[in-house]
Amino acid sequence: MGEYLDVLIVDDSVFFTESIGSFLREKNLKVATINESKKVMEFLKERKPTLILLDIMMPELDGISLCRMIKEREDLHDIRIVIFSTKLFEADKEKAYRAGAEAFITKDVSIEAIGNQVLDLLQRKIRIKFWGTRGSIPAPGPQTVKYGGNTPCVELNLGGDYVIIFDAGSGIRELGNYLVETKERVKGHIFLTHFHWDHIQGLPFFSPAYIPENQFTIYGCEDQEVKLGKVLSDQMESVFFPVPLRRFGASIQFYPLDEGTYSIESFRLKTFYLNHPSKTLGYLVTHRGKKIGYITDNEFITNYTGKPKPGGRFQVDEYNLKLIDFIRDADIVIIDAQYTKEEYKSKRGWGHSDYETVLDITMAAQIKKCVLFHHDPTHSDDDIDKIVRHCHKIIEQRKVKMDCLGAQEGLEIFL
Image (cartoon, rainbow, N blue to C red; front, top):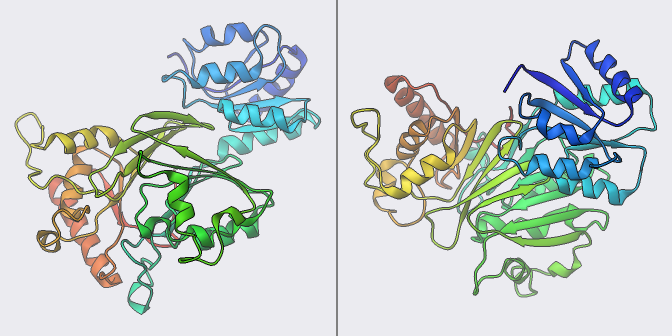
């Protein structure tokens, strides 16, 4: 698609595009400018920038409409977009974020200040942090200090003004305390895989949900019998918990998901139904050309052999093959690996996988980093250390280029 380009600046003001462009070029960035918004889509056929700066008010095609058009294109969706404007209305900011913009910059500051904000955005990394890694039930104690005892909760920070949260196990309590301490206002997207207790039990203790200025959208699968909002409110009925969900002060919206593809904020989300008792979703986030998978709880089909056929194909069940395609070439996949092969023999049909089969699948999918997740509550730190060492040995024996580690509470990974 032509030569590499760092930044494309689109504004009907020649003075503004050249001023910002000159500042960024002095920082050794490759910059292009366009003063007619109608020419942008044609330009993008030849050159694909890392980041686009779009003015909100332009003749013929405004910045928000253009942002939406770019984000709707599969081949352009990972381009990062920043809206900038002299307008300071909150409604315009909300429209920009809904269209897929990563940030909103006001023009009422110096060229240098705007340029520095762009530099900061370009330098930001995707951050993943684990707040809960344990499966089935919390397992606190001296034997689980390294990998943690809280049930599933993973934070994904893409560098915008919102936080992405996978699952609301007991680990979400500490994440909530951190958000209250570090942010004046919290906007979040909470993606639930399913409604088993270990994945929702922390929500009543999520302190940002009680603060009126905050805003959360909670996503998950539902059907005629199981409704997303009702399941979460039922666990906070007085027989189970003293404070009802309606006491949440934050704005809470519920968004049911099916298997498919969704555009949310500045990222693309794909969902996949997993093999687990009750309706369960796996997630794949694409942002800035990076793919992040979250696959728990899941049981791979057990007739999977992991043995290559001629031509490198693996003998797999159709379900396994579909999941391999779903996570193929991902930069990181956080994946259920609760059992050893010996443990799995007596727990077949419980909805979880053994770590050796997980390795077979992730190696077949050619992912870059595999994070073993949903640790069994009976597994101590020493047990998980042994599992990780065995995984490293298998990877080395097969001469596969894939990193593998066990998810640890507090661990941060940057992409």
